[in-house]
Image 1 (cartoon, rainbow, N blue to C red):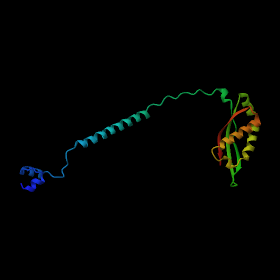
Image 2 (spheres, rainbow, N blue to C red; image 1 turned 90 degrees about the vertical axis):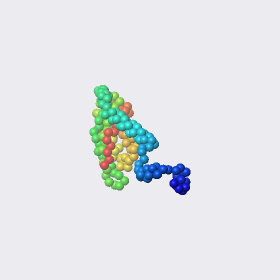
Image 3 (cartoon, rainbow, N blue to C red; image 1 turned 30 degrees about the horizontal axis):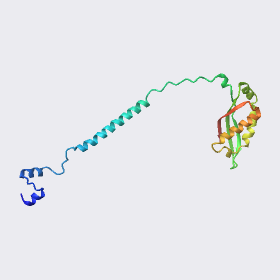
Length: 180
């Protein structure tokens, strides 16, 4: 072996058998699985198992039988008698554009007592007359915004109390307020 080959090999001399064995192994052959590569596979397997367990738990939670519905006691006859349905009111109002708009209003009046509910039923035509004049005074722009229903409800309470009596009505429940 020459001096140059000895220097290139780090000062160690090789036999001809070692050199021919090294030449027989191609340089591009894959190296055996290193321990560092194995350690990357374990966390991935652990994460996959954890995700599978989470999905199974979510499936069990979502597919469990629903709790039996609780029965609500029916409203007593006295409380149900306090609600007085008014017939729907349809009126035309004018907007800023000059076109006619229609308002449909359905509401329930809540009486303070059973006797007051009977009084409301008897005086329903007077109540509707008071509300018709108020609703015809409305403009389409008065119904814009989130506070419009509250303002209409408050004005209806004032008009109903003026027509029927201050102590007869405790609330007005608006069921539908449709503008077309």
